[in-house]
Image (cartoon, rainbow, N blue to C red):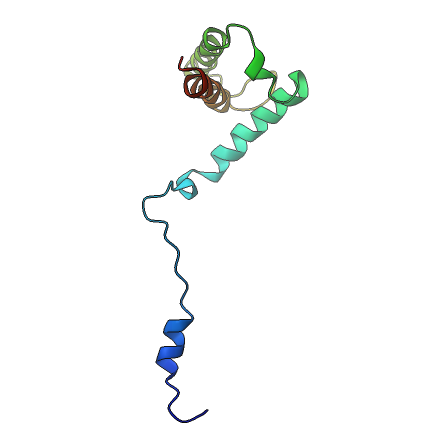
Length: 108
């Protein structure tokens, strides 16, 4: 080690900085929730085609109704959608995502 070299000052120089205060904490979303929603979206993409939900006529009303049907089925004790085999709650989340998309993109 050369004379006058301070190890403490070297450590400070090697510390990285990342300004992420106030940024969206997506790491707080439960990973299994993200996976469940993805599984329902994958099921839908295989059945109807990817992103076809964006082109459904009267989509706001129809997906609101679909969300309610899934939520009521869950509330009545049916945890899994019989067609997809996935939780009704993940179907509700997908429908809410569709409604949020239309609200943000169309001012609905």
